[in-house]
Image (cartoon, rainbow, N blue to C red; front, side, top):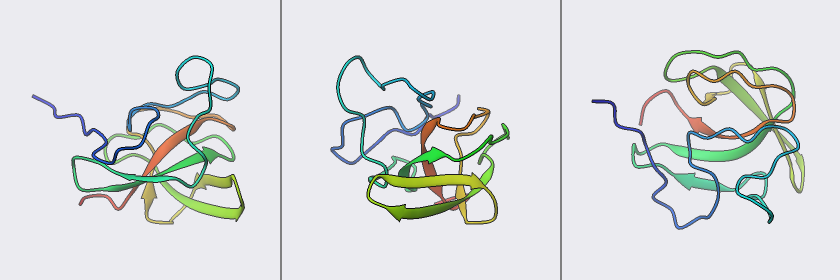
Length: 107
């Protein structure tokens, strides 16, 4: 049995394993979480809501390692790199896709 982590913080927004494709909203009309927001997962890992600045390849758990760049309010991006954060496992992402990046490979 595989346990899928879930958000333990009282934040609204997409599941922590969900990717919102570029140009889409997470759940019908209404605002998505602001870039840079953080939440904790039931697996003990901190997550940050980010936008892919380019293509991010799919990788098995813990996901593709990414580096995060914050250049201003609501401008927090992730790119493939060695930043100690990880993309959602088993999901390829395109530029503009938004997701919860997880800090560290394990809690």
